[in-house]
Image 1: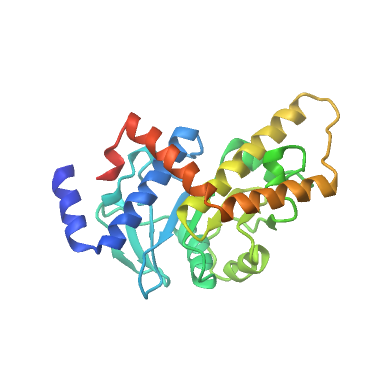
Image 2: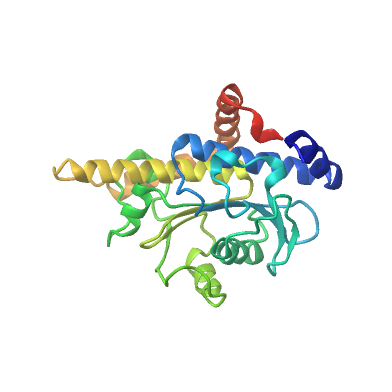
Length: 257
């Protein structure tokens, strides 16, 4: 089946809302590839399928982020049953454990993004975690959760501890592992990931310089964090997302199929 036929086949059998979710999630994968937030085939983003069921879309296990298209995404239910797998590749079991836990527990969360970048892993391995040394880091001042590493996330009982650790926050550092962000929309989740990745990279770069670090005073960090929250409430993540997607379309619009 060629790409055009496959696209039409998937688009014809899903609702308009699901297709729109597929297109947005495919964009998130391609944008992450552009930013260099990839770990070959080993990380995963998900988005909840609109509707009454707790179904979500996630990447097929074996495609790199730059290969993801709207038609290639896998639809899975909260119990791990695969409902639609156009490529026949299945899904990463660890991806299911992490993403299904959050989609099951948090009604308001519609998108979950997880990365294994060098900077993210480096900060996740540091005892003090993310430091308030940059404006980007201030986005998460006292708004960031941590979850201790328990091995590759294949055991369902870890889900309870993961959910307890993330609580109602939308950014999580998986210690010795990587980063995770969530959002009421994929635009919010991507906005959060952008700042968490940049904050991590800035921290590693600053530490590599060898000089003493300037830690933001609590009051200043809190002021900046509240300004970020106001920006989110005013629609900033949508502006950020739209600009990123325009860049993606200028380079390669194949993700839309």
